[in-house]
Image (cartoon, rainbow over all chains, first blue to last red; front, side):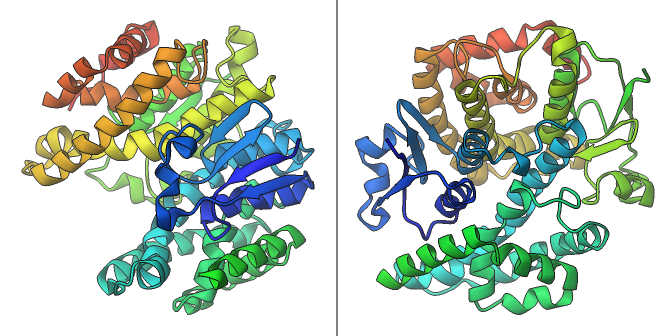
Length: 218
Length: 217
């Protein structure tokens, strides 16, 4: 039975899981969850993700939530462990470090920006709160300074090897690139080149298409 | 083997996350204080260890790390075998996934509800004489109740979060929960008997008791 991912492809957390499935080439089924109709809060979905969020994931009897946990499971099971480096203590630690940075710094600054620039006008009929956007762009720039320094020394975040830490950035990076604030990365040439590199991966291109198709349908 | 170094302050929640793992595996370690008053966290030496100028940072020989959850995983991977503990379960795909899920839940669900309560009720008043933002605290208490509903259900099925075995997912909750218990909102746990029992179990571990002595604001 194919693995199942529950959630809309346009969700960054769903896309994170999909790209890992694409990286390892495992069969999967993307099961839609209509968040505009509150389906993520339905008893059926909550039984899979007790916080009523997306994604949820199923592999046989195993049900998981939290995209970064699901991603690791998929990579370990599907022969993608080179993206985690768990055989090497110090390399695995560097992957973990930059995955934490992705979550705690990059995602936390990007999430309100994407919410204000995409979700509010497109799905909620509201107006972008520019104060929130500006505050978070400033936070983002401070993080990008750190990324620029890191990527001036190493080809990828965890070292000279691509890892889940890099790929985990792609969903928010995609929305940054197609949104009104893409030019913020122009001041960070190594970051810009690194993002272009990640976005050119076949797995990332495939999932980006799914994300774009999902947005177009709305 | 030289003791590993943890850069930061013993009362810091994120430092304590690393220390509880070091204690559980019985590793030798040294805490190197960082003087925030003197802006040592922004010094070139510390930024070389933690480019975001935060604590903890960590050093084991040539390995220099930051981000407490990443450091903790490194410690648990390195010392688990010799200590005879298995707190990450990386030998078993499904168990490791469960540990990862509940470690993420701590970071993404529990922590955002608990941390502001701890900061507003304890840390900001103690360190800056700042008044408590009660509106923020009230919002977080509501968030926390919803999170504890999920935890109560989970701990009704298993004795620990990832399953019927203690793991890093449980330990990761120790620092912020320790401080939550020093706020008036400790009593929230009274409505969640399984969560309360789980917490009391964690708090009574030798590792937690030892570290608690240095954790107050």
